[in-house]
Image 1 (cartoon, rainbow, N blue to C red):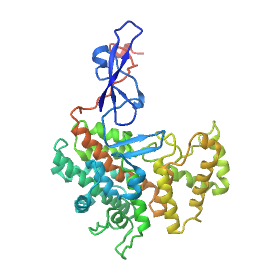
Image 2 (image 1 turned 180 degrees about the horizontal axis):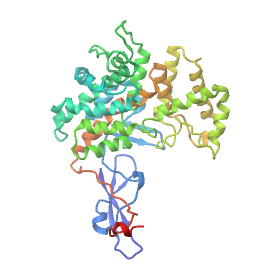
Image 3 (image 1 turned 30 degrees about the horizontal axis):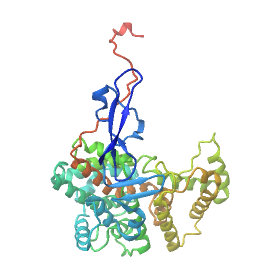
Length: 437
């Protein structure tokens, strides 16, 4: 962040003195006006619901250009990372700022692999949940509970503790997600295997049983790995901001990440891919491909409450770059599993075709987003809809940790304290109960 020679001048029509505000330039992206001294000098706050025009931090991790449809991790385009790196390479990049060399890659992969087991007592904690509990309810509890099992890495102000907790969280999240899944369907837990890759290990823990040896399909393993990469970080979204705000109080890293998991659960955030597949299933129940026309009419009707889930994006005003990559993976998976003729997936492809060609959607840039395709891919892999957001949380954990570590190391960091525009009652006195209306 470098100061600009140009400054902004804030003037007031009520006769208050004007104020000069510094302007900072990032390496790319919009300039930022520094309003930190605004209240001290004017007694006024800014008003920005949803923080849509406010930069709450200085970050070097992820950059999004919504107009161009560009996503960069540490400067690297997501298209290159998703095709030339695996998820643990991406984790290393997000945590340490550079892609690993051969030795660093080997050491990091080994380090993460050696921490994939969880404390055996965790399974007894898990058994306290109802088997029909939503996996995100379970994951919120499990991630927060890690701080009760790993006391030696809970000091957020200790760099070594933060590094240890980062490795533990990245390593153990697949194990916890798989345990939550197995518990919900009544199958025995499958322990991790150190000879397998991160994503292959996850697939095995999810779908293996003690009855027979599980042989992973490399196409499917690569698909889940790509899902992890594409969801690893996404700048200052709701869950990342939650992790930063929670961590700013000095709470332990496990608690801060659990807060991120809880925020991600919302249907407007991490639950979007779940909502997209539920929409497809609803159309399927109404008649499938033959009923798409009627569904599209309801979507276009201004008086209708029907929404097209999995299309368009709050940030990307053009095409979501992750969607293009996920679309390739989607067709690879459907081909590998012979599912192109499956009614649900035929419906999804028909809906995709309409959205890409219909003038109504093209004019509004309602292109299929990453949630649309990742939901289809996960369903094809055999992952239940209720588990989609938990897998999103698994992937996003490294981004949350990188953002949290960056905040703690920032010399300008302080506890978050948003302001408000108060519109309630002015000061008043308590009346005796007999005198109250």
